[in-house]
Every structure is written in C-alpha cells, then in structure tokens.
Amino acid sequence: IIEPIKSGIRDPKLGVGKQEEDDFFTAEENIQRRKLDIEVEDTEENAKKREVLAEREQKIQTEVKEIRKVFYCDLCNKQYKLAVEFEAHLSSYDHNHRKRFKEMREMHGTSSRDDRQKREQQRQEREMAKFAQMADAHKQQQEQKQRQQDQQQQDEESGSVSVPTAPGTTTALANQDQRKALKFGFSSKGGTSKNTTGSAAKKPKVAVASVFGDDSDEEQ
Image (cartoon, rainbow, N blue to C red):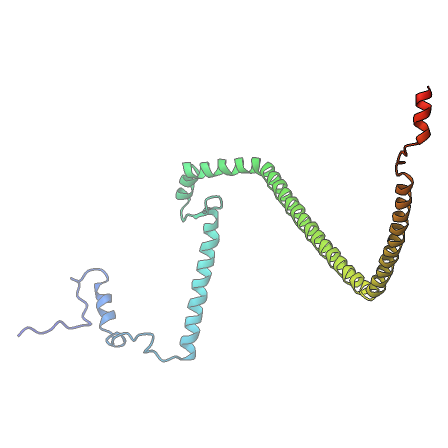
C-alpha cells in the first residue's frame, strides 16, 4: 500500500516556490471554496473596501484619459493609445487631406457666407413685396365691394323717395294731354272754315254769253 504524500514536509527535490505553493493551497483557510460576492455578508468593512477599490479604479481611468488626450486628433476625431500610432496617423494621407480641405474651406468661407446672406436677404425682400401686393389687392377688393354696397343703398333710397310722387306726376301729365287735345280741336275747326272760304273764293267764273258781244264783233 502506497501512503499518500504528506504535506508540510520540506523536500529538497521540489522546485523553487513549489513548497510555498503547496503550503498555500493546503492551508486551512484556503481549503474551502471562495465565496461569491453575493454570498458574502454585507458588512461595513466590506462596503468600505469596495468604495476604496471603486475610487482607485476611477482615479486610474481619469489619469489614463488625461494621458491619452495627447494622442487625440481633433481634426479627424480619432483617439490613439500609443505615440507610435498617433505619429503614423499624422503622416497619413487621410489626416493631410482633411487638413488641406479645412484650410481651403476657411479661405472661401467668408465669401460663401456673404453670398448666402445676400441670397437670404433677397428672398425675404421678394416675399415682403409679394405680401404687400396681396394686401393691396385685398384692400382694393374691399373698397370696390364697399362702393357697390353704397351705390345699391343709394339706389334703394332714391327708389323709395320717388314712389309717393308718382300720382301727382300722372295727373299733371293727364291735364297737359287734355289741354293739347282741346287746342288741336279748335285749330282744326278754324282751319276747315278758312279752307272752305278760300275754295269758294277761288271758284272759276262761268262765262255768260252776251247778246251785245256778237254785234260788236260783227261791227269790227
């Protein structure tokens, strides 16, 4: 029967650190399984340890970010971790192309901005003129409609005033017609009498044979 290997025996044949490793794993506090975070009781000491670890990690992250800001390219919006990568990026075609494009845009930016403002101002002026024209047309339509209404009202008022005077005018016209008829009757009678007398005066004379006329002719 082969006996199991005993722990705690210093064997010179073991390698460097092998004995310490065996002692660590065979210790009483390490024989049991390590408990998970959810299994560990939440005590004040454990809470303080967690807070300290979290603060340390956060501090490390902020320091790393501050260090890496040196390797950040604002033009290309790219972050690099190593100085070699950042230097390679600065000498790349992409970075230089963006740099030249930015310089060209800054050179022509002022003129294009002025042209854009001028076009915007012209567009606003056209819109204002159009609105003013529409307002004038609407005003003219309102004035024309008001004049038509006033004219209709005046016509209605004049018609209502002339209606009561109609009987008087008709009677006056009737009297005038009667007078004309009477005058015409008298003038026709006088004309006929004059015509009869004139015709009677103008009747030709009838020649009467004379007895003495023959004798005188014979004597001659």
